[in-house]
Amino acid sequence: MVVETEHKDFAALQAEYDRLYKQAPIRDEDRAYTWMAGQLRKVLPEASSILDVACGGGFFLRELGRLYGPKTRLNGIDISGEALAIAAKEYPAATYSCSVAEKMPFERQSFDAVTCLGSLEHFLNIGQALAEVKRVLRPAGIFLVMVPNICWYQDVLSVLFTRDRKSRNQTHELFASYGEWKTMLEDAGFEVVRSLKYNGIARAPWKQWLKDLLIPERFSYHFIYLCRPR
Image 1 (cartoon, rainbow, N blue to C red):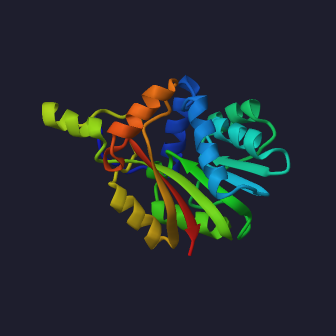
Image 2: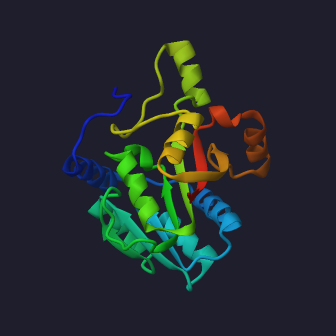
């Protein structure tokens, strides 16, 4: 079982994600995308343009389009052509490009918001990807990013009882603590204006309330950071 980052190149990473998307789209529940889009809307009520980096099958872009409406231009990039084929069918109102995050095909300050859900940790050069996000984001824009926690409570319990972490389905992945991710974002020139814990969105409100109550942020499954460029 691979539990740390493997060395790959872009071609190998593209082949891996094409294979995964041929098997089944990588996605969260629709209610999770609705919740995440709402978190962006709280700090950015209006946006003329939004870019979703590593957009996958376009599921989050669909929710952003529903929430922000037709006046907001939506773009998505992904390394996988298989993912983009799904996205074009799922939400054809957006514009899609096959691109890596480390070199985006956009002019400086093109977007009011950039989003990246559960993908930054898979990029080959995270620092270069963050520099590109800052380049294409407008000065007053918002960067919403979701990343995995190395101290997730289920991993902690798994190590306690089995001496090993839980397995993952993608080999090239970086895990870090809350503080490590925050420092990485700050070193890249972002100011974290808000952070959220993410452990999935339960179907029943009482289950969500219980999760929010019992799982501390530092032991949550993922962290969501809402940032502005400095």
